[in-house]
Image 1 (spheres, rainbow, N blue to C red):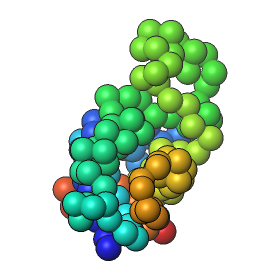
Image 2 (cartoon, rainbow, N blue to C red):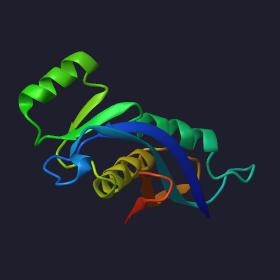
Image 3 (cartoon, rainbow, N blue to C red):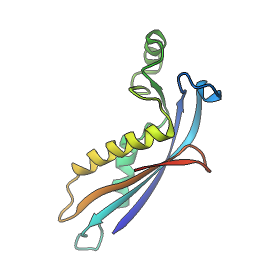
Length: 141
């Protein structure tokens, strides 16, 4: 059985060294769409409560955060983390593009769902779509 859950989140980013306007700090209302495969259901016929999916997505998605790659100047990153706290500024080992975020989030969700205990139910994360706008997304894998 396949289940899809979508969740919006607001996030700012800048792409270091990019020749276009995305090199400047800017934000989007993103949407993450996750497709899961569940094998089995509980006695009520439910594979997973959608509230559980929502809570896990809220736990992982970088809502109201700034994501930057570690290529930015250390002094800048230190100042940002000092004034906005490290829980709101995330320094990543990659550029925060939709392509990289979809792959990264797939890994985060896959790891989180492998640790989820659901009685007699096997969970697989099939795909993650990261929507940067209403008209553009990247899907992994």
